[in-house]
Amino acid sequence: MTENEALALKVRETIIKMSTDGGCFIGASLSCVDILVFLYTKFLNINKNNLTDPNRDYLFLSKGHDVPAMYGLFSELGFIEKSRLDNHLKANDSVYWHPNRNIPGVEFYSGSLGHLPAVALGVAMDCKIEKAKNKIVVITGDGELNEGSVWETLLVASAYKMDNLYIVVDRNKFQANKATEDLIPLEKLEAKFEAFGCEVVRVEGHDFDALENGFEAIAKTNGKPKVVICDTVRGKGLPSIEAKADRWFVNFTHDEVSQLLNELHGNETTQLQSETIVAR
Image (tube, rainbow, N blue to C red):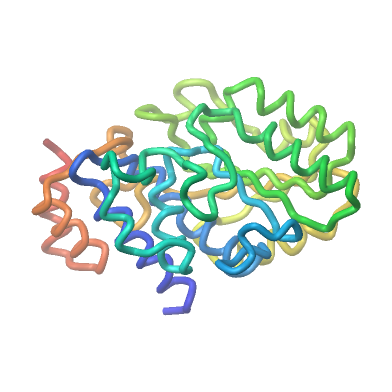
């Protein structure tokens, strides 16, 4: 197991632990873990010591319901104390269902889908004006692409040649509790982004080598906003809930969480028990 694979496993453990006592959006959180791990460890100039440095890179989590993945990663990277995650959904902290700037490393509040691409564009434009070299990354869900504000942002980004702006799509093929292609079909997605003036690459979102190759290739292009479509699996790491339409938001019991943690680590007997849990 590589260092990043081990880190991603720890983040997935945290997400599962946060799926009780009020619950969380587990499926989409599990799908974007590897993307976040790659970005923070290999691609972005962001670490626990430069969170307020104007020369840092910026990441905006527009699909804010995936924040358990961000919380889990931040706790492993030392941005926040791991014990703080025990405050999830409690009134004494800001560790909640969506990102809050009271959490170190969170650049902007999110939860209203389609909102943060425009915020990220504003930051990218400011960096261009200042002749700074920051990379600006915003992660969207694929269902989020139904929001017209995403495409309005791309029109402006393309017009102003915002090649420091990266739109990363977590393409797990579900929007809430329905498959995207059964609701409002998105494909052919690459062609749509290209029609809006973007440079586009599509990669396997759970393969760290593929992520690295894709981001390295697109980073070399100039004069266009960059789009990285990451093909992922909702619920990745838990076969009993992978690609399940109803495994969007969950609130498991503590016993169920223990079984799912065992499943994450490859216990086949526990997987069968977990399949019984999620079938109810």
